[in-house]
Image (tube, rainbow over all chains, first blue to last red; front, side):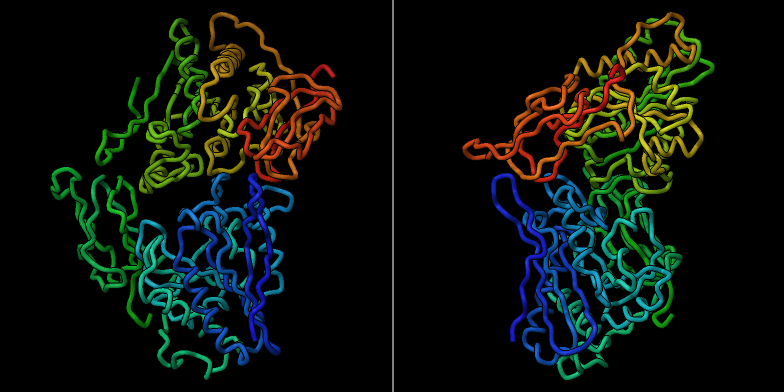
Amino acid sequence: MSSLLTVICSAGMPTGERVDIVRRRFSNGEGPRVSLVAGVRGDTPEGIRVAHIVASHLQEHHDKISGVVDIYPCVNPLAAHRGIRRWPFFDQDLNRRFPGRVGAHAPDQVAARMVEDLQGTDQLIEVRGAHSAFTEALQAQVRDTDHEAADLARHSNVEVVWARTPGPAAPSTLVYQFPRSIVLEGGTGNRLTTGVAESLANGVLNILNVRGVLPDEALPFHWAGVARPRVVRDDQVFRLRAEVGGLFLPLIRPWAPVEKGQTIGEVVDPIGGRLLEEIFSPETGRVLALREQPVVLPGTMVARVVSGGEDG
Amino acid sequence: MAEVYRVEAPYRGAYRLERLTFGSGTPTVAVVGGLHGNELNGLHTCNILAGLLSHVRLQGTVHIFPAVNVFGMDQGMKRWPFDDRDINKAFPGNPEGSVVERIAYALLEASDADVCIDVHSASPLMRELPQVRVPLSGREVELGRAMDLPVVWRRAGERLDPTGLVGAWRQQGKAALHVLGGRGATLDVGDSRTMAQGIMRLLDHLGILPVPTDTGNTLVDTTKAHVSYTYGSVGGFWVPEVRTGDRVKPGHLLGKITEVIGGGPLEEFRAEREGVVVTMRTYPVVHARELLVRVADPVDK
């Protein structure tokens, strides 16, 4: 049994080359349709790696699948080719172009074609890496009003589920187009970190199990070993910003526990190394994200801290 | 010249938002250029305007911000280079937010005026006939027409997005105009002069100038229903046959898409209506379904 590889959209280059966006479909028996989308931005290779691992596992257990799993391993191949966030040439963030437009330029067409191809899916999971300047703890993000998605995301083997209030840009994102969507992310921006993609892939496989697509015996782990994260809301997530420009030096690792008032990093003078500012945690909790790119300006976010205990 | 906002920056000098102020009292006008660091016609328009205003005694106040995204300008970038964020998507800003949100907040505070103008170039891929874009109705239509620029384009929902500067001004109840002309990443001296003269006519209309200005030449006063959009159906090498400002009749050859290698013909484009070329693709390598030309009904049709 083998998966079906389909070109869902092909973007023609002026020089004659064609760039294909492909979908790999694993289908067997009756059951829900789950879609896994990676590489909407070109600087998130961790998500693409998750797609590879999940596809490899499904290939091995194809006969045990009940339903359909569609994997879109890289939606923005030209950006991935260069390791940049936006669709090149048009300089468009594909995740600000949904639901897309038929008959428009390539990014809009790809967005429209993706939305069309995803119609009828029962569960959309988008996998990303961290923002390019950050390391982030493994996390799932869902819309704050979508309790069904939050409940399901608790099975995704992450440290925390963040139920976010949609911002002004949310309607133009992929996941906003489909109810119950889950975003999985973590690791370091534009990097592959050993173990990150494997953990997120296990989360995807566990969701497939919870949705009835994969039986227990097809999981590469015992379900009891899956992390059971708590769900946090925006008022439990604190953005820490530098107030002076310089080099940010983190003094802690992502997902490390912190006490209220604990120093999580320093900003130092970029020429002499003199201490300019200490960054303190505003709450007791965990470090959700930490800046890796050291140069900061006043107002640059250097960390996110999620407040509260482990079992909140 | 007054520094209205400053951010210290590592490895280089501080970011400074500078404001030039001419005259005093009311009415007040704010003119912003260089919100995008690679749209230099806005900068040059502001500087021409500053030169003109320095020789007259005004009956009102004009604030000019020639270059908002100076760090982007230094590097030829549209967006703020540090984190690649667009200042024109950061309004109304936040004094405690990221650096572009702080700049946006400071600019919105410092540009408090009765009439506000945001001056841009087109993208580096396109050229636009100097124009003012206004909503379909309201005071901005009257103010935009007073500029007597080559194009007055009344657009539904024009810049209502409050994350942009024009939308943020409108949210505050100000009369806000979006002016653009020429091409990004280059300097179009004539288009910059045309836009500066249009702003001078607006100042005259508002009673700020003590002496009358010359009249302009509005070629197009239109809505979208009276504009033809030409898109290519294939990618290739775009060879234009007309320029912005040209008058064309139905059937007039606008340009061709040819093969990148060899130059063989792929697609030919002809005008659908009599009108004025207001928008032209300038960068010749084109992808399928990109905008190539816009032709709008002339005022004297």
